[in-house]
Amino acid sequence: ARRLRDEPVVFFDVGALYGYFSLVVKSLYRQSTALAFEVNPESYKALRNNVAANTHLGRPAVFCCNLGLSDQTHLAHQASLQGFRLDEDTAGGQTIVDLMRLDDFSRITSFVPDLMKIDVEGYQSRILPGAMDTIAAAKPTILMEFDEPHILERFGKTNADVVRPLFDLGYSMLWTSDHR
Image 1 (cartoon, rainbow, N blue to C red):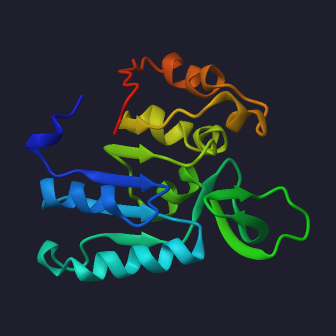
Image 2: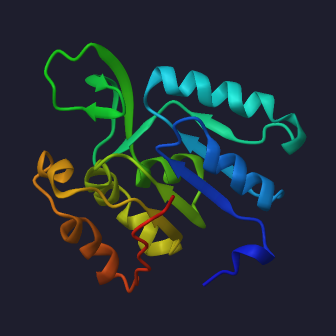
């Protein structure tokens, strides 16, 4: 495993919202490459503004991607966005979004994460299946939010279902119950 404090990293901030974690990582690892993924157009605008305001971190401090990661790649896809919740299965959704498998993104761009933060309100159940080739090859450190069971029910999954493929790859888990 890589020692993150000793070398530059490629950081994927999945569900970046306003970019807090991307900017923290960039502050700690100045030579790192940070990519912030945010599918919500309104949050994406705030993300870009926050990154632009942090000129002391260099240009570009964070590469902002108005892109949702999922288990399938669908560009210009109709979806429903309500607050932080994406529903890509909604027929006739009011928002057009780009969705991409992380495996496809990494293959196309050659960016492979050393460190990933995933905070996507249950959507990790869709993201991880589309990322397993990259995760298996790169073995990034993953910081992932677990959600209440009712949040994952809409995906037909449990937290155990979501992390089982990671355990199959040899990952172990450190758990904290109060991240605030």
